[in-house]
Image (cartoon, rainbow, N blue to C red; front, top):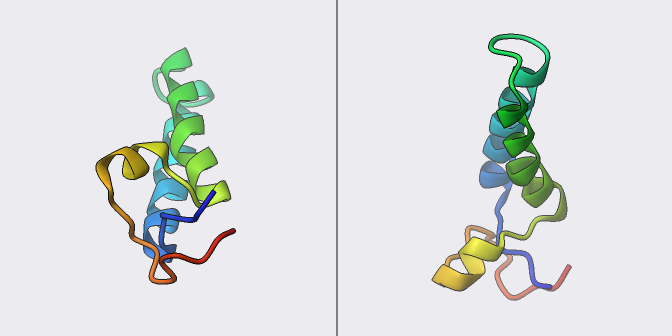
Length: 66
C-alpha cells in the first residue's frame, strides 16, 4: 500500500476524526460520532482508499511505499 495522504491532510483528518468521536461523549451523544474512526484511521495509516479510486495524492513523497 502506497501512502497517499500528506502531512497537512493527516493533521486535518486527526482533528476532524477526534472532533467527530467527541460526539459520543459530549454534544449530542450520538453513535454517529463513530464516523470519526474513518478519517482517524486513514490518518494513522497514511492511506485513503477514496483518494486511490480518484487518483489523488497529497503526499509529497509520492511513490514511496509505506
